[in-house]
Image (spheres, rainbow, N blue to C red):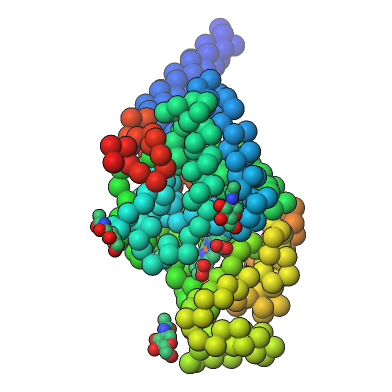
Length: 328
Ligand code: HEM
Ligand SMILES: *[C@@H]1O[C@H](CO)[C@@H](O)[C@H](O)[C@H]1NC(C)=O
Ligand SMILES: *[C@@H]1O[C@H](CO)[C@@H](O)[C@H](O)[C@H]1NC(C)=O
Ligand SMILES: *[C@@H]1O[C@H](CO)[C@@H](O)[C@H](O)[C@H]1NC(C)=O
């Protein structure tokens, strides 16, 4: 009798557990139904070749002009930090994000347009510019010998792009680690992810103006003398338009040299060097000196960034041309 009662209560407990799990599952499903979701196989039936088409166009553009790689990677960051990852940065106009001074140096738009055009030939009206931009950003890292990653998709293109957004959302090159941490936290990204994503500066360029607080007027006493002399020679004024490669050793490779540079004091912008100078972020710099660690951290951080305030379902639209809202 006692044995049977134990069995009964075990069965009752199991039933309760199953019921509780079912309820939990239902709650989870109903809450994800109202939240945005992205899927790795979002275009598997509607446009199965989309990622090949994008890769083809981005590689073509890259082999013609390798600066499109840093150009596009930076566009993806500026997109996600303003109105979410919704291609709002791509829209042309005097009053759109592109008109903001923070975006004045962005380039690589033609390659995105070419990718969109190729995709439209195969699957008209199906693939968003927001997703194409994320695929393209991943492709630029692969093309510069970094590691690729799977891009969750299903983003819709935004209907809003304001020149007033970038100054509110994008961090300037004069920010300290503390300010950068707060800026990324506002987008749901951690201090560690901020440092990892800054590793993007292993490719591409900056300009003299961005070093205004280090080499003009008040000189940053922590900058190595040889670097200071070299930069002052290249940048006679803060408005000199000469591009300065951020990673002076391997500007075309998605390697860990950016982190080595700042670990030895040779970062260019305040926002770079501060990551090593500040004990709060230095451990993240040190951890990413290893290529394998950086590769997988960077992939994961890019996927996290690509989720920022995405629009899905029936929100927004699928633009016909990435640089214009539909109906314009
Ligand atoms: C942590 C905060 C960041 C700051 C303060 C910052 C700031 C800057 C600045 C001032 C430039 C130079 C622009 C110019 O003069 O042309 C630059 C270039 C660049 N940034 Fe960042 N950035 C940050 C994070 C990121 C992130 C998260 C990414 C991408 C995931 C990124 C990707 C790039 C790339 C690829 C370039 C080179 C662009 C080119 O060659 O045209 N940056 N960044
Ligand atoms: C090749 O690159 C140049 C600039 O470097 C650009 O003007 C031109 O449009 C590019 N051509 C193609 C086919 O992408
Ligand atoms: C945008 O600016 C250009 C050049 O300043 C001007 O010619 C044009 O009329 C402006 N367009 C709009 C829609 O304001
Ligand atoms: C650039 O230099 C000029 C002249 O030295 C100065 O007046 C100006 O404030 C500087 N601009 C920036 C953005 O630092």
